[in-house]
Image 1: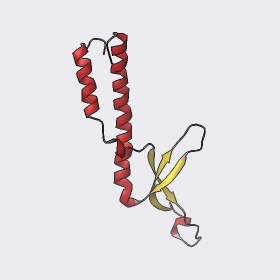
Image 2: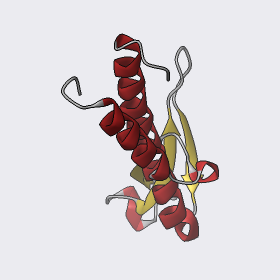
Image 3: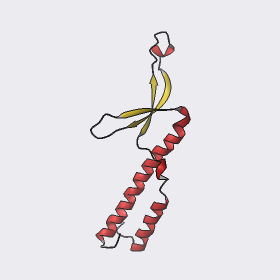
Image 4: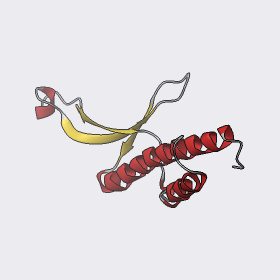
Length: 110
C-alpha cells in the first residue's frame, strides 16, 4: 500500500466502492444445518440421524447467547447470498479503511 501513488490509492478506493453489494441485501450471521428429532419414539429419527437437514441462521452478539432462526428451504439461497454479501461488505470496508489510513498517514485529504 505504501508504494502506491496517490492516484492509485484513490482509484483503488473507487473500485472498492463500485464492488459493494446492495446494502439492503446483507445479513450478519452464519448458516448451519441441523438434524432434529421429533420426539415420537416410534419414528425412525429416534434411532437414526434425525429429520433434516434443516438450515438455521445463527448470529452471535457480545454479552448475549447466540440467536438461531430457522431458514425455510425456499429462502436458503437468498439468505446464503445475503450472508455472503455481508462478508463482502466487511472485506471492502477494511480495504477502504486501509486506503484512508494511508492517505491520512501521507497527510492527504480523505
